[in-house]
Structures are given as C-alpha cells and as structure tokens.
Amino acid sequence: MTAPEKVTQWIERYVRQVGEGLPRRMRSDVEDELRTLLEDSLHEHALAAGRPPDEEMVFEVLRRFGRPEDVTERYQPGPRYLIGPRLY
Image (cartoon, rainbow, N blue to C red):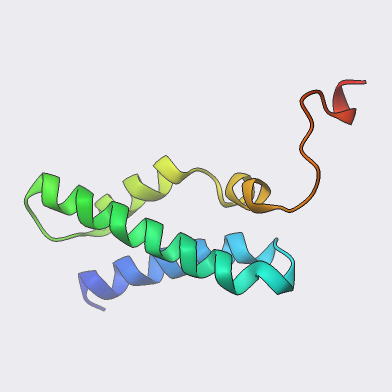
C-alpha cells in the first residue's frame, strides 16, 4: 500500500468512526463535511512542511481534530444548554 493510500485509509477510518455515532439522516452530510475538512487541513500541513502528506502528518491532523467520540458529540442534534442537566 502506498503512502497516499494509507493516508486516505486513516481519514476514512476516522470519518467512519465519527459517522457511526450520528443519526442516519445526517450521517452522510457530516461525513462529507468532515472528510473535506480533514483533507484540506492535511493539504495545508503538507504545504507548510514542503513535502507530500504521509502517515505522520495525517496522525497529527487527526490528533488536532480530537477523539472521534468528541467530534461525534459536537455534531449531535439536540438542545444546547448553558448549564446542562449534568450539573444539577
């Protein structure tokens, strides 16, 4: 497997993990948006480094985006509280 294939594989794996926790009706849109954000961020990182994207770069980009569970929660629909029920 070549480096670009590995990079794509890691991004797809991350996007899939985020999507699994989302409602089916919004999953595809969020996955497309997230994939684009990750690819754009990786491209910027590669340009700044002056070399093609590799696994090290993709891992850094994914770390900056956060754990898939945390990203999933940010996309969850529903009420947003200033002070949530967990604090009571």
